Length: 312
Image (tube, rainbow, N blue to C red; front, side, top):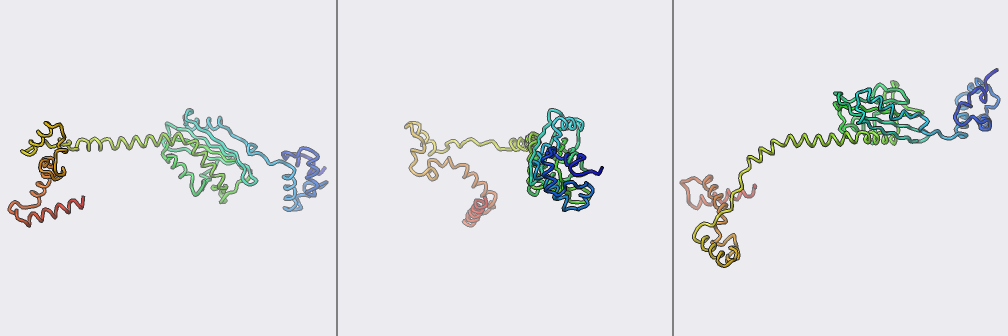
């Protein structure tokens, strides 16, 4: 007996169309009642499209979980097989619907103490891919750039596993090496990668700060040794200095309170400006020959001092 659409386990195989009432509605709307299966498909794409539309109308949209969740236990076992440390294992998943298509994303991460480079494996619909099928992730980023932001470089001893499930996957080339996945889905992929690698990124940032501190340790110690000892404040020296110091001690007043002029000009406090005087004397000695002490020499040293002050 020839197969019909309503019999022989064809429409019945579709989720939500096991009841005879819904089967009858689908057959009526698609014009396929009492039509042999082979004859119906000979009507071409339009007939098949009408049958698909009728099936979608009388069934519920499938949940993303129906694509088949692999689960954390399987990812943990695979990470351990690749040399991953069980205690460092991280797993995240996300289900979503974009347009009419459900998506299932699972990402796992583990630290591999014995590895010398990062190990990455990506699967689509339970099939492993030959190369990275995600040329773009999020807003104008790649998988490498997302991992680099998390301090996962090519020589990082880690394992990263990812699985993407979708009923219909579009590929950008005939070799099926690059997929065309909506940006909102790749944004979620980026978020999951950041979640499973957040502890690794935090640890690496701490290590980099420590390495930087160690590198600067010797430099700082050397600079500390090279610092000149802070000179002691100048002691009162000279007749005027001795007089104002004695007057301040006997009257219980400060030297500043006994000054008539400003502290920068009062002759009784000239000893406080000894450093400036020594500095000027050193400049005079360096810039003015010993056989010149006329007004031209004083003018020359004044000009040189002005240039040094301006440049400093």
